Length: 402
Image 1 (tube, one colour):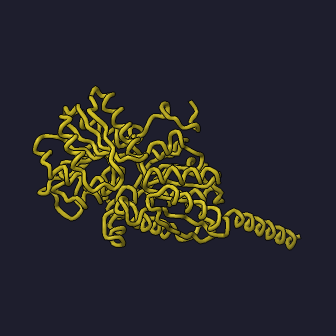
Image 2 (cartoon, helix red, strand yellow):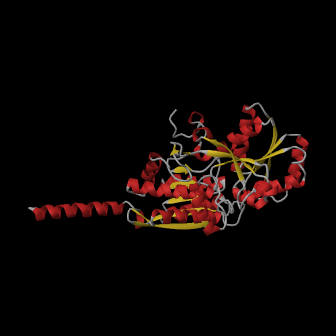
Image 3 (cartoon, one colour):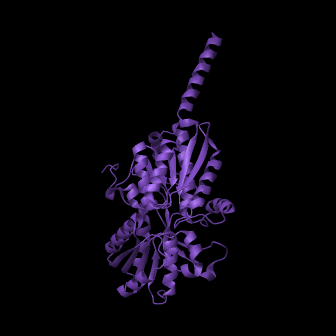
């Protein structure tokens, strides 16, 4: 009798083991980092995002549900059609289970559409359009780090409180820039200010002189840059070359990353007010992780890169807790559990796919205040997560019950 019981127990164990193994497609969990290697967003995301993802996999132990975890990577070249083609190949042919990072909002929306059709996971960290978790939201797509709403609300409110109530918005002419310009305009008008003009420039613009002349002519007290990456760096440098700082005009960066500050130089960046989802020098925990990252990448992490680490880690935890890498079931697990790490301690994922976590209103220090390399920000205020995200009552996401 005891032998039969033992055999029965063994058969059940083997059956359960086989069942668990069947839940990992191709017997490997593949994560695709779709990013910008050499373009306008390469410093804020790029290879640094790949480094962060690899760190997350290593820290997780390299396996999940007893199966290996692989990282694949590709450059989308800031072209939505290229990104969509890569995503289709990855999901359909190469067995990629989740795509992460996707800087460039137009690219992120294109990949999101591909993932929707296949019920696959995509987690955006580098892109900022609030449309991703708005009208374009899907059950299997998530926005981890920031969006145009979170950047617009805190930054606009802080600048308006200083009495700067007339704005000129210079926006990159693609999805992100248009969405950011709309969110900033709405916040300025809500606070009783005026928007003198919204002017759009092509992505990867080198010469901003004509736009700056228009901004001067508008007599606006604030010039808001609704662009990112090297576009922001070039615009800030030329803003200073035209002497606008000395004339009393306030320059505000709506999507400034710490690599942008490093690239433009502290003298050019001093006084910039911005909203950020992560600052490496904020706590002992953020410093410890960031120094590990720096040892590999040679630069301190941006919020996008830190967000990639957090997103990949939470994705792997969700596979482990759900016992599968099936996209729909993993998506449910992603929403079911809090996000507790150095990036988003006590964060939660809403039904629209937005990770709710604290944001930080910061100001770039003056050169004489910088004590060591990358000591760039003064944290002015911690913005509670619920305050930093668009209220669900205003959401256009069809998944939100109102």
